[in-house]
Structure formats: structure tokens, C-alpha cells
Length: 420
Image 1 (tube, rainbow, N blue to C red):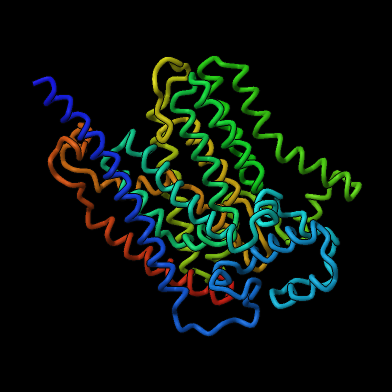
Image 2 (image 1 turned 90 degrees about the vertical axis):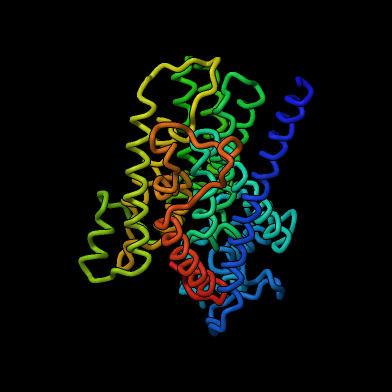
């Protein structure tokens, strides 16, 4: 009897792992199926389409990818011969300031320098599959009935092309997910080290990663001041080292600010970019998607803050992280950044890229996917219920819309047209 029970428990665990692999595999496969529809579409190529590797990888090496590839080759000051191809994408040549490329953080160019552009694209896609796995494990640990639907929507979201292209979004997402994964057991030295690695990755690849510092709140709530300090050091080290590098090469502490200022981005009060866009009649698909993301983000922030109201936490217990004060604060920071960014004539330009890393906001979109047992307050567990996870019609509608929109975005991006 005990042997039978032991075998049953072990099989259940194996089945659980296999089920996770299957569901993550389905999400990743659907992600790429949607991208291929766009990449293989008959849309004519733009005159600004890049052919940097003269291989199939060029479909995923467009627009900002050109900056990363050239930084990997030349450093942060390009020779004039390397600047001339940028004229096709609307950049003024010669660059002003000459270190205009300094607006891009060094982690991705370093990978390209070591591996090459095509191999880095392969690595980014492998890391995106890992991100889906981490996301699934994190969500299923707190809402098992919503995990599959959430990663499916994320895998085919309208910005999904950025997670397979030679862009920074996958690395930023990976860093944040590693932080969250480690924070489930902050008393463990290995989990703490994993969170610190996540902070180093996120903060070294994009300025969005600096907001990962807010996860130090978890250690403060657990009364672990030294770990909070170490985590903050890890989050601050990459941008500090980058600033030191820029100062040594360009002899100004404002090199990064000057480089970012050359892109004409300014900062306004929240929602001004949305109001101006709608007021001028530019209610595009991008605008509608951004509006939806704002609503879902506010919903998730409110629900997480309500569930995680106690300030002091017990370090000996595994604490929630998906529905936590820390994740709510991180989501609020990215949301606020996107709502304050403003580029004249194109107020919402790049806001999609800010918002696309907000992985928790896809969970509210799946809330109605829960079973009747879950809505009555009992956690749904596919391993014990005997029934597969069921999606609500709303999830199918949103998922289908996302697939169509993502295919359009993939088609525009891969053919050299500006997606955003």
C-alpha cells in the first residue's frame, strides 16, 4: 500500500513536470507560428530593411538591432562609413553627439561581440523559452488555473516579435523573472544569489532594469538589511560601471543623458501622451493595446497590493511573489515610465516596448478562465481535479486578437517597416 502510494506520488510529480514542459512548449511553438506568419507574409520590403548577416536571421535583426550590432563591432563611436546606413532609418548623419550610441546599454552588444549576431538571436530565443518556463512556475505556484492561459497570452502578445528579435526585451524579462524566482525563498543562500544574478542581468541590459531595485523591499520586510543592501548593490553595479566607462571615454558625466536626449524623448505628467494621441485622432491599434495594458496593470497593482497588505513577513515561510507588494511596485514603476514618456509628433512611440515586459498584467486578462471551484475560493489543481484546464471564451477572443495583431507586427518588423 505504501509502495503504491509512493509510486503514485512520484508519478504525479513526473506528470506535473511533463505537463509543464508540454504547456510551455505549446506556448513557445504558438509564439513562433505567429511570428512565421508575419515573416513569411508577402509584404514588400522597406528601403530601410537591414541585411546585416545575409541569412534568415536578418528578419529578426532590424531597427534598434542595427545599433547593437555596430556597438559590438566598433564600440560607442561609429566611423562615418558605419553611420551612413542609418540615414535610411531617419537618423541624421553625422551623429550628434558622436557617441549617440551610448543610449544603448552594453550587455547585449557584449553578447553579440562574443557570439555573433545570428548565434545571439538563437540564444535569445532559447532564453525566451526559459522565461516562459519561469513565468509558468511562478504563476502556477499561486494560481495554477491561470498559469497556462497567462503564458499563452504573453507568448502571442502584440509585441512578441521583440522577444525573439535581436532586442533587449528577453534579457530584461529574464532578469526580473530570476529575481522573482529567487525571492520565493529569500532565506536560502542559493535563491538569494539567483535574485542577485537577476538584478545584474536586468540592470545591465536596459535602463528599465534599474527599476528591479524595488524588489529590495522584500528583504526589508523580512528584516534582512544586509541582503537588501547587497541586492541594491547588484542592481546599481551595472549602470554605475557603465557610467564610469562613459566618463573615461567621453570625459563627461552626462554622456548617457546627452545620448538619450538625442532621441527627442521628453517627460510629461502621466497620461499626457495618451490624451494627446487620442485628442489628435490617432486611435490606432497600438493606442488601444496600450490603453488595455494600462487597465490590466492598474487592476493587477490593486489586487496584489490588497492581497499582500502585511508589512512584516516570516522569513521561514515561502512567500507569494506574483501577487506581492514588490511586484506591484515594479509594475507601477514601468507603468509610470511609459505614461510619462513623450516624443513630439509621436507621443506613444516606444511605450509599447516599455509595457511589453509587464508579464504580471496578463494574469487579470485570464481571471475568468478559472473553474467554478476556483471562483468559489478553492484553488484549482489539474493534477487532482481529473479535468484539464478550461479557457473562458474571453481568453480565446483576446488570444485570437493577439495572434492577429502579433502577426501584423511581425510582418512589419521583419520587412523593415517601423512597427511602433
